[in-house]
Image (tube, rainbow, N blue to C red; front, side, top):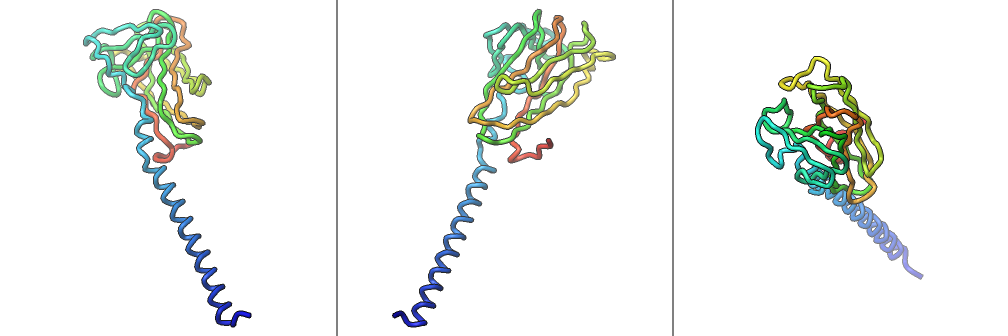
Length: 210
């Protein structure tokens, strides 16, 4: 039979071991969370060429791209789109922006890196080609092929020097290590919505409202 002092030492050692295990587990969890928050994966989430500065278009003009062609990291998935050169109309980020209607309704997409089961915020600037109808330019944003946001912009009172860009945003939950982001027009005429300054931020690093 163990002496009382031996039992006390044994039980005390057991408690210490449990406490040490708990501290180690908690520390490991905090390190894991810290690694997720500070992981550079969020930086790679940013879409490349989000302000459509590549390729460079002749100033005061535009270049039309058709389905299957690339605009930097973006791919034209349907129809045609027009990339504006510096000075053709007002922009928000840089000197170029993208009209989603060329001579036919168009769409562009890009696959970005994401973390599984992580919420992201997509933000961009929206306007419309003001020199032709209809007055209301419409379109949608799709995430992995699913419509996530419908948008519209009224060009009444707008002009190329004063486009009247408005900020747009929405959130989505990533289920995998990559996500396909697509912008598409639903305007059937040749003058459509214009987008600029597309950004994607992880809600691990920024405040994302519902």
